[in-house]
Amino acid sequence: MPTELVMPHEAVERFFGRLIDEGPVMGPRERVSQPGFIHFDWLSDAADLRLNYQTTTIPPKKAFFPPREVLFEFELTDPLKITAVREAESFTLVGVHPCDLAALRMLDDAYAREPAEACWPANRARARVIGVDCMPDEYCFCTSTDSCYSRAACDLFLTPIERGYLVEVLTPAGEDMLRVSDVSEATDEDREQAEAFRREKAGAMTARLDATPEELAEILESEEHTELWKEIASRCYSCGSCNTTCPTCFCFDINDEFDLGLTGGRRMRSWDSCQLAEFALVAGGHNFRRLRWQRVRHRWYRKFVYLYRTFGRPYCTGCGRCSRACTADINIVDVTNEIINRARERDRQGVQG
Amino acid sequence: MDKRMVRFGNKPQIAFFDFACCEGCQLSVLQLEEHLLDMLNHVDVVTWREAMSEQSNDYDIAFCEGSITREEDVERIRAIREQASILVTLGSCASGGCHNDLKNQWPMAEMLDLVYGDMAEHFDTIPSRPITAVVDVDYRTYGCPVSLPEFVTVVKRILTGQRYEPPNQPVCVECKLNDHLCVYEKGLVCLGPVTRCGCGAICTQFGDPCRGCRGLMDAANLEAAVKALTREQAHSIVRRVVERYRFTEEEIEAKLRIYNNWPELKLEESVANDD
Image (cartoon, rainbow over all chains, first blue to last red; front, side):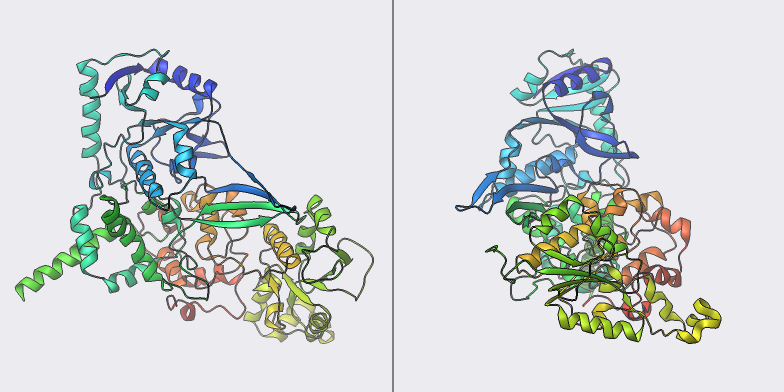
C-alpha cells in the first residue's frame, strides 16, 4: 500500500509553483486565444494549471512524443554532418488522468518491443508524472477497459477530497517532490472521502462495453462483420482524428525536409494515422487497405485483437477522445456494442435454427 | 555550378504568369520575403509582373496562376507549355478549381450580358477551367491563395529533381497535430474533413473554419458529409452545427462547389462511397 498524504487546498498552488521553479512543467491549461479550450502545455505560472479539467483533445503522450518533431539536422558537407536535436532537460508532466496513465504504460510496452524505439524511453526516463483523478462525461468508458483506477507510470497521484487532495506517493521520485511541501498524514476520514470519490466516478460512468476484452477479441476474430464495417465506412471521412487524438496510437511517419538554401535540412517525424488512404500504400503502388471499410475495421482489430493478443490488454483506455473528436458522429462504444450485439444475435438464431 | 542541381546546367530562369485570377498567389509568394533570397541563390527570375518591370520569353520554369476562361488563354498557356521545361500551377484556380468555375452553372451568353451588358459582343468567354484541364502540368500547388509551405516544398523538389505528390489527407490531420480547438465545437461548419491538407490548417489555427480552398482530397467521402450534416440529431461534436443550421443536401453541395466546380460538382454522383 502506497504512502497516503494530504495536500490542503492552500498548499496546492505553492507546490506546483515550486515544481515550475525547479524545471519545466507541462500540464492542462487554458489556451489564451481559445477560452475554454484546455490542452497540455508548458506552464509558467501555477495559477494557470487546471487540475479539474474534463479532458483534452490531444492526449498527454505529446509530452514524450510530440505531434511533430525534428529528429536531427543535417548539412550536405563532405562528409555529411548530422546533428542530433535532443532536449536534455528533465521535466514534470502533471494532471494526467488514470486513462492516460494507463496509456503511457501501454506505449512503454509497445515501443520497448523489438525493434525498439529509442526516443520514447529516453524521454520517459527523464520525466516525473503526477496523476489526478477525474469524473467521467458521456464518452468515458474506462471501467470497461481496466483503466479507471490506473496508477501506472505515475510518481504521485492526487484524488480530490474536502480539504484538498489525497496524495498517493508511488515512487521515490514522488516522495522527493513532496520533501518541502505542506503535506500531512492522511486520516481514515480522508481515505474514506477518496474512496467515495472513486465510487462516485465509477457510478457516474454511463457508457460501457457489453463484453469483456477477451469476449470482444473472440467476437472480432470469429466474424468479419463486413456489412457492418461498410455501414460505418459510409459515414467515415477517413480524417484520422480518431488516431490523432488517441492516447495509445503510436504510429509515425518520417520525412526529410531541405532548407530552401539546399545546403542542409532536417529529418522530421510526425504522428500518422491508419485511417488515411496512404497509410498502407507501399512502393510499387499496392495498398494493403485501399478500401475505407478495411481501414475502419483495422482500427478495431488493432485496438481490440492484435495488440490485445500481443500485450494481454486492449489498446484502448476508454478515454472517449475518438468519439468526442469524430465529426461524423461515430462513437467507439456504440459501434463496439453493435458488433457485440449482432454477433450474439446471430449466435442465438444459430442455436434456435 | 551546383552539383546537386540535377536538371539544369546553369541557374534556371523562372517566370510567373497569371491567367483569370486576382494575382493573389503571386503576391503571396512575394510575402516569402527573406526566404526568396535563399531561392535566388538557385534561380534567376526573368518575369514576375507583381515584383519587377523586366520581362523575358526565355525561361525554363513557368509558375502559372489563374483559370482558363477564354480561347486566347488556351493559346497562351499552350505557348507557355511549349517554352517551359517545367510548368508549375500556382494555387487552386490553376490546379483544381476555384471561384471562377462557379460561372459554369449558367449559360456563357447570360454571364457575358451580366458582366459586360451592352459591350458583351466585344468579349469572348468559355466555361472556366483550371490550367491542369488544358495542358500537362509537372507540379501542382493548391490553396486560395497558394499555400506557401507547399510552394516552398515544390521549389525545393524542382531544384533537387524530385517529384511532388500533393498530400492526400484531410485538413483535420494538420489541425489535430496543431492541437487546436475543433471549430465544430464552436458551431461552425468546417470543410476540413474532406479538404486536401498542405496548408498547415492555417484557418483553424486562427479559429476560422476551413472553407475548402485546396479542393477535395482524392476519395473525399461526400456521402459522410451529407450523412453527418443533414441529420436531425447528433450527440457529438457536430451537435451544435446540426442544431444551428439544419442543412439540406443542396446547401452542402453549394458549400462544396465554391472550390470544386470543375468539372461541375454533382453531389449525387460523387457520393457513391469510396473506391
